Amino acid sequence: MVGAVLGMLFAVLSQQPLQDALFRMRRRSRSAIRSLGRREESGPAWSTFSLGPLQTSALVVEGDGEALIPPETVYVHVLDEEVALPADMVPWRDEIAVESERLREEGRTPLWNGPRYAVESFDISRTPLDERPEIHLRLRPTDYYTFLAAQQLDRRLPDGSTPRSAYLDANEPLKAPPFLHCSFAVNIAVVTADDMLVVSQRSDRVRMAPGVWNSSVNEGMSRHIDSSGRSAPDLHAVARRGMREELALEPHEYKLELLAFVLDVDKRHWSAHFFARLKELRSQDLQERISRGVADRWEHQTIDYVPFRPAPVVRYLLREDRVHRWAPLAPALFHLALVHAFSRTLVERVEAQVLRRL
Image (cartoon, rainbow, N blue to C red; front, side, top):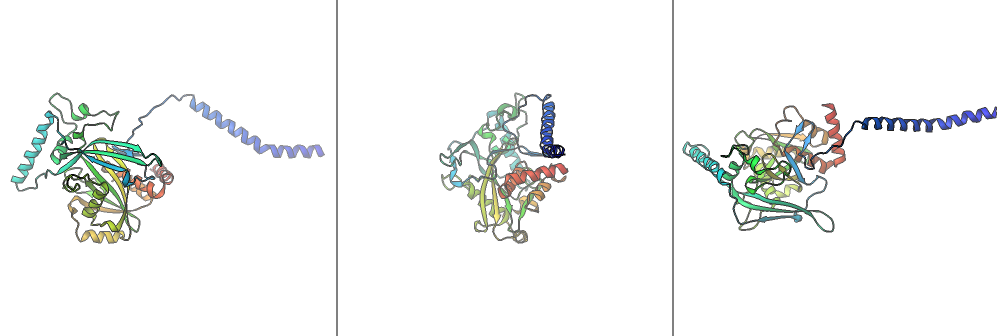
C-alpha cells in the first residue's frame, strides 16, 4: 500500500517537469525542421524609413529619437567657393532664369532666385568621454536656380545618361557632388500643450511637392537670412525662424530639441529633424493664433491636429488617404518624435499591433 502511494506521488511530482521537457524538445525539433530550408541572407546596411505599406526615401543618417543631439556638438562650416553645375547642366539653369523672366513679364509670380547652401560633406563622430554624436556639416554657397536645375535628376544629358546615373551610386547613398545637395532644411514635429501633433498639407501654390502632407514647420536654410556676415548658420536659429514664420510662435513659447539628421536619397534633400513642445498654447489657441496671421500662410492649405499618442499617430500615418501622400521626410520625423516622447520599445510594439490589424 505504501509503495503504491509513493509511486503515485512520484508520478504527480514528475509529471510537469516531464511535460516541460517534452515541450522544449518538440519546439526545438520544429525550429530545426524550419531552419533546414533557410539560406544565408544579406541586406543593405543603409535602408530608408518604412512602416508596413508606407515606404519612403528618407534615410535616417544620425539619431534614433531617444538620444538627443546637443546643439554644442553640431559644427557648421561655410566654405568660400560657390557650387558650380557641370557644363552640360548649365543650360537647364538658364531655362529656369528665362521662365522666371517670362512669368514676370506676364504679371505672374516669378521664381525668386534666393541664396541657399549646398552640402559639401556631412561627417559624424563621437565625443571622447560620453560618446555623444558630434556632427561636422560643411556648406558651400549656391542659389535656388541651381537647386531647381539639379532637381531634374532623371532628365537626359547630351550623352544619354542622367544626373542620377552619372553622379549617384545607390550602394553609397551619402556620396554625391555638392551641386546635387543644394537643399538643407529643418523639419519640426510640433506638439501643443494639450498633446496634439500639428500636421500640415502643403499648398498647391508651392513649386516643390504641392499638396502633400508634411510637418507643420519645414524651413529651408537661407544664406541671406540665416548667416550674419561671414558667420555660419545655426540650425536651432533656423528652426526658431521657421516656428515664427509658419506658426507665429516665439522661442519662449516652446521647448526645442534636435532629434536626427535625415537625407531624402531620391531628391537629395538634407534635413535636421526637431521636436518642439508648446508650453501653454493648446491646439485651439494655436488655431486662433494662426487665424490672426502668419508670415508664410500661403505655404499650407490644411492643418490637422492629431492626438499625440503612438496608436493615433501611427493609424493617421497609414490612413488610406494619407499613406501615399506624405512628403518623404515627414513619416520618419513623426516616428522619431514618438520614440522621443514614449520610448522605442513602446512605439515599435504599437506599430506592430496597428500593422497586424491592417
